[in-house]
Length: 232
Ligand code: BTN
Image (cartoon, rainbow, N blue to C red; front, side, top):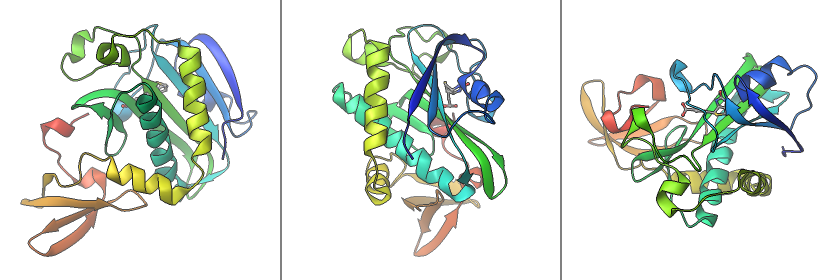
């Protein structure tokens, strides 16, 4: 799957909503980017503050399968790490959907789908904090490329670099290896069923492999209570 074309909007409620509304007529691989979102959405019903200066975009894949979701999430995360690396910013992945720099969030991914196992479409939305300097309600929790490097970025260039990185990531095993090696949760202790477990790994389909005194278990993200650091 490749990103094939770009729709550019000055303003929209949410780039994910836009693709949902046009899902029937758009081809797979269309990406929509907006300078500003009036109702940007994050995971768990949170809002995603979307003023001018950052990257807000979504792309559509259709049809798709439910089991593809984690692979596309990993590919999106790794393309974002590579974009940041090109700007000399060393970021990490905070499972499942966040990109962080020293515990501060720099990018988030929202994946939405329609259908059951065989999906009509998958919409992948990505917000990258680029030129924003102040994060009034998220002080210490969020950062941006500009805050880290003191540079002002051209959003159009940056998006093209992201698309090139994404399109070049053609080998799922390679993407999985990078996703694992750059995940901050590996080795962390978390609480599960009233015990402390160590995160051993993340499975290729997106579950977490935990170990506690030689006992192993594989669980879904939703069943875990993460320490404060991991609250989105
Ligand atoms: C999260 O970290 O909670 C996910 C944030 C995803 C934000 C992006 S911005 C572009 C796209 N449109 C939206 O409304 N949300 C995503």
